[in-house]
Image (cartoon, rainbow, N blue to C red; front, side, top):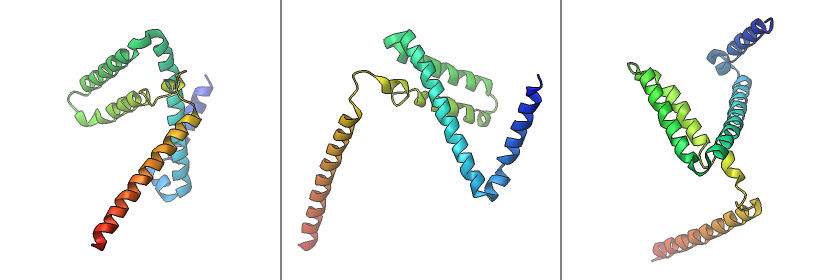
Length: 150
């Protein structure tokens, strides 16, 4: 029980340390704030990835249906909660949309698919795409040079 006041004072100190006036006056604090936000995003992504991987195992191939239902129910709940004040619903809706995209195909649990290509194969594919784009760019530049010389 003695840890609760200690935690509250630590949160109070952090809120004073990261208030907009102090962050605006110190680039070090701004950089530290960016680091804290990125660390929090990474931790949230790992936690969501672990949770959704468990749900993926539970629901199998119908996981995407569960994900869409959960997303739509969250949006309906937020819109119902802030029915008379839509400007207050923007931040929670943005948070729900961010979580929806974090758990999508680019999310943590999708990357661990066993039949996915290795990193080397992905890099080779990217190198081939860059090479093809370079060839196309050279052709466009050559055609522009020909048009300018005429």
